[in-house]
Amino acid sequence: LRSLGIPAVMLFGLPAEKDPLGRENFAPDGIVSQAIAALRQADPNLVIITDICMCEYTDHGHCGVVENGQILNDPTLEILGQAAVAHARAGADMVGPSAMMDGQIAALRRALDEAGFAQTPIMGYSAKYASGFYGPFREAADSPPQFGDRSTYQMDPANSREALREIELDISEGADIIMVKPALPYLDIIRQARDAFPDLPLAAYNVSGEYSMLMAAIQNGWLDEQRAIDETLTAIRRAGADIVITYHAKQWAAAR
Image (cartoon, rainbow, N blue to C red; front, side, top):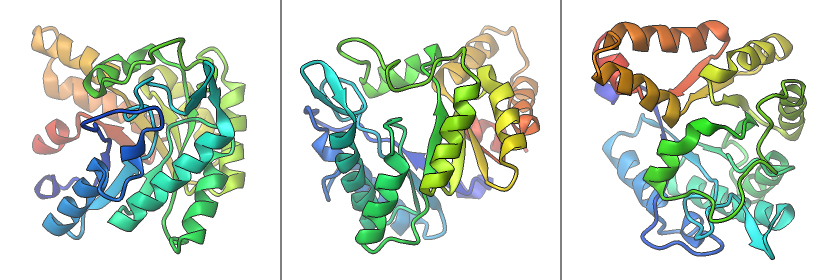
C-alpha cells in the first residue's frame, strides 16, 4: 500500500469467537490490536485508523449492548471507550466509532484523555445512514443483526437536515474529522456538510455495496474499469470530501 502512495488504512476486526459484549474488540490481545502491532512494525509511517464499533464482535450483530431486545446507549459508550483506549495503546493513530450511539464522541474523548491519549484524534461517523449498501461488508464480517435492524440508531435516508445536526453535535463533542457514510447515494449530504462546516476535515466512506455494484458491472464488461473508478472517486472529492475511504484504493493507486 505504501509503495502505491496510499498513506493510511482503516482496520476492522473479525474475531475467532463472538459474544454479547464483543469482548475481543477491547481485549489487549484482540485481533485488531495484533494487526496494529504487526503493521506498525512493518511500516512505522503508515497511518493506522481503527473502527471501534461492536457489530463485528457481537453474537447479536448490533452495534451496542443489548438487553431484552433493546440497544442500550450509555452502557455501549463505556465499551466503546475501552475499545478506543485498547487500540490507542496498541499503536493506532486514530479511532473511529461507527456505532452511532448518542454522545459517543464525548465518551471517547474522555476515555482517551483519561488514559493518557489526549493527542489521539477521533474520526466521527457523524452522518451514517441506515443504508442498503452495507450488505457485502456484513456478509464478510458475519455481522448482520440477528433481530430487527439498525434504523433506531442509524439515520433515515430521507432526512438531510438531521445529518447537519448530527455533524454539529460531533463537532461540539470534540470530533477531529467528520464523515458521511455511504458516499455515492449521499453526495448531496457531503456537499451540505462541506458548505456548513468548511474548516473541519470531511471524510466520505465509499462502502462495500457501492464497490461491489461497480465491480460487478466492470467484471461483466459493461464499464471501463479505470474510467468508472476515476469518475466515482472524483465525484466524491468534487462533492467536498477531503478524505475518501474506499475499497478501490489499491486499484486506483496502481493505475496512476
